[in-house]
Image (cartoon, rainbow, N blue to C red):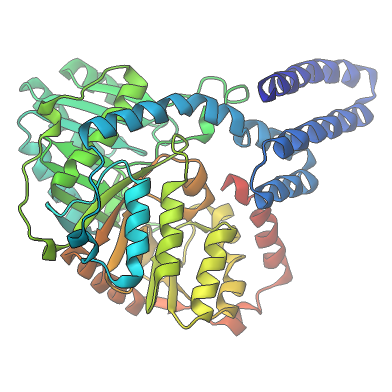
Length: 504
């Protein structure tokens, strides 16, 4: 039924535009346009209601229509249609689950595994096991890479040493100095017989030049744009972006985290200055989970299945259980349970001592917002680290609209003081951590394809704690009373942008 209602909506749009052209000529534009927008909004609200969405999302969309009557219509056409999302990605979800089950299997949780967790975190451990297609690995080694100065040399070194294959999946790839350096290595490796596959997001990397791609093609690099957008006002693929950053080399080494490929991630952009970010180097069993995520995304876009032992036999790291565990969790419109959001929520409500969150874009939904406030009111040390300078002004101002209620509940909000903060980190009780691509915002929770690593009492967790403490030293805490003194104009701007939270 929804399909036919949406067909009717788009038919009405086409007919309406044609009719508007006629009435402009006849001089009756205002009245006719008002009728058209009103009827369209009523039809859209009806669709939203019968989709049985979360009530807060429904109310947000209605507020968008009320505040932006004309823009709201086009926002919904581009960003709001859940039915087509489920229709498009249900098949991918089924194929992914089958593939992960075949390769990874469903390993039961052992008593020895559970004993690695604190009593209050065993619920989180069980949830992660239930939601994740991939198991928790106690035979993996991870290393935190702080900023581009540590990340890119490690990536370049690994790419140079590749012998069998290189698999890369990125949201943003730029044709600049670091982008060209990586391109040259890929070309060199492809010409030497190494299999190179490169998946980039069609919207995030829309500026990637044809010359850049042509050089890769001529060298034998296989590449593909993820979810290309041809008719954005008819199809809504523009809304569901691949925000993942994954590199797998020979099935043995992996990289994932917050850094895309571009010079700004090395602090070479004068506006941002230092770019504060975090990446993760992975070796061992958990690399297979990253590989599976890439291979399934590659299969979705190209139709090529590569579930072969050549790609799925990582060199094992034989750690004892005291070394801690790591689990790779994929999330996106092709998953049923909004995996990363639910794991964030579970981390927050499991905390006994501290919750430290770093996110460049903070647009929480009601569940996360309430969990943070309740934790803080319960005496947990809740800290939120955010940028002091915006790279997306709408998101920046919308984020700030949440600060007063958080600070009223005792949450300590600080702005990073040495440049732009792009790390996406959650650390609970200094022993459970998440690092990856998912921001603390609705776009990451509900729309983007993301991947996070969840770390259980590892050395990498300790390193994230150390980095957090250094970041706090160079950050400026927001004073609640002073923040309340901001102008009425700024408050209105923040409130208006907060209305757009379903889109951000």
